[in-house]
Length: 99
Image (cartoon, rainbow, N blue to C red):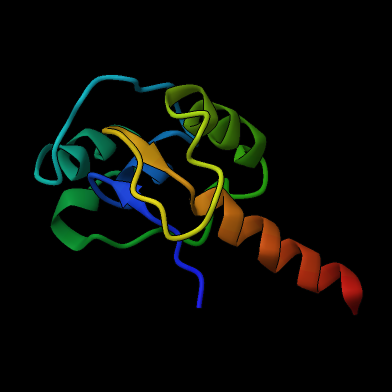
């Protein structure tokens, strides 16, 4: 089993789809900061169907690697902020191409 790990939480990966963010943060503030990009996110913690996953994936990946270039393997906890959620996205995309 391989895990994608985000520090401090998954919301950093969502934020990087919209803008760069390199400052230390915590799991309580990040959902609130997403409200400007995803209205009401901190209340519902729901990702809308029109979220730009595909359109902004490359930007999010580059931002993640910019914050922690060594966070490129599964099951690794990187510095704050960091995420290797892009590994899961690439694995899913790769499986889709095999069909």
